[in-house]
Image (cartoon, rainbow, N blue to C red):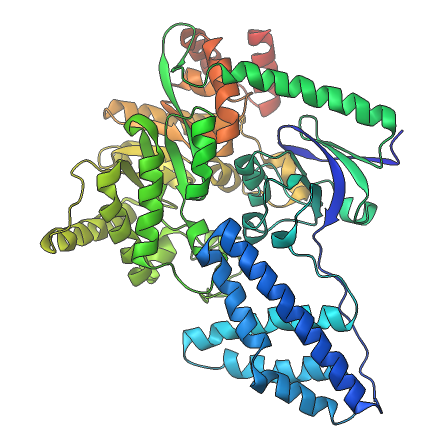
Length: 572
C-alpha cells in the first residue's frame, strides 16, 4: 500500500501521477551575528545578488513567452531593485559595520520599505512590495534555501501547496503541471476554480499534504474521488493508470457531443457556456464545445502586475474573447470584482473587519471611478466585435444598478461623440449573489436585460458561512431548500418579464444540481469549460417536465439531506 493516503475535496476531475513540487514559503529566519571577514561577507552578499538577478531574468523571459508582457512586467520591476546601487550599496555599508549579510539586508531594506510606504505617490508606494520580494530572493540564497517559482517549472510535476493564490495559478504552465493538491480550500475556492479552468486534476482541503511530502515524492492525485496517494506501490500506479485510461475513454465519448446543441430528452434547449479568466482560456472554451462565455472574470487582467491595465490593453483582451466565440455566441463580461480575497498590490484597499462584506466589486468601482470608466470604455469599444453582455457584480440595490448603468451610458455617449463605433445591441445585467437582490428579483427584472446567479457567494451570504473556512464547510449547501427557493425566485422573476436567467457559480456545472436547475427553468448554465460536455450528456438524458416535478418536491423539502434523498429516489 501507499505510504500514506489523504482525503480532500475533489476540485477538478481527472487522475494525475507525478513527483511533488512544493510551492511553500521557506523558512528564512536567521540570527544577527558579528563578523570579522568584512570583504568575504560582502562577496557572499554580491554572489547572492548576482544569482538572484540571473534567476529574475530567466523568470522574466519565461513569463514574457508563456504569460505575456503584462505578467512579465512585475519581474522587470524586481530587476530594477536588485540592480539598484543605492539599495545594494546601503547593504554593503551595513556589512562594513561588522554585521552579517542577512542582518544587513534586513535592516537596510526595512529602511527603504518604510520610506517608500510613507510617500504620497502611489507608484512609489508600490515599490515597497518589490523590495520585499527581492529581499526574500536574496535572503534565500544567503541562507542556501530553495525559493520555489511556479514560472520556472519545466518538467512534469504535481504542485503541492498550502493554498494557491490567483497569481500563483496564473503562472502555472499546464504543459508541465499535471495536477495540484492543497492543504486548505473548498470546491469554490479560487485555486479549485482555476484548476477546472486549466483542466488539470486537483484536490483541495487535504489538511496536511505539505507536511507529508518532499520535493520529488511520487504522488497520485485522484480528482474524481478526492484521494491523494503518497509514495504509491507499483500495483497502485498500475491501478490508477487504468482508472486514468477509463476516464479518458469517457471523455472521448463526451467529445462526440462537441458540436451538438444542449437539448433535454423532451426537447427543451438550454445554453451551456464557460467561465473564463483570460483570453488564453478561449482554447478550452472552443475545444469543449461551449456555446459562449457566461462569465469572463476580468479581475485576472488586473492581477499579477504593477499597475492598472490601460484602456487599450483591456480593449485588446475583450476583443480577443469576443472574436473567439463561434457563431456570435454570447460573451458575458463581469466588470472588475476585486476585494474580499482578491487584492491588487498597487491598489491600497482599506483594512476591514470583514472584507467579503466590505468595499469590493461594484462598491470599489464606485470609489475608483476612473478605473471603472476606463474598463467601461474598453468594453464599449470592443462591443462591435461580438455579442457582448456586460454584468455588474455584487449589486444589492436597484440604486446601485441604475448608477452603474448610468455611468455606462455616459461613457457610451462620450465615445459616440468621439466618432468611435459602439454596438447597439449590448445586454446589461447583474450578478445575483446577495440574498437581498435575489428576494427582490422581480423589481430588478423590470430594468435589467438578464440576471446571472453567482451561487458561490449567494450560498455563503445566505448561510452566513465563509466558504473558505473548512471548519464550517458543511454549511456550503447548494441543494439546501433555502438556496433552491432563492434560485427559483430569480428564474421566475426573469421569465415573468421576458428576460433570461443564467447561473455562473460552480453549482451550474455540479452534476447533482443540474437536474434540479433544469427543472427550475434555468436558461443558461455557465461552468468550467471542462464540465460542458459531461453536462450536455447528462441533460440529453433528462426530461425537463419530469425535472420540474422533481424541483417542486425539492424546494418543499426541509433539509439538503432530504433533497438529496428525494433526488436519489426520483432519478434511480
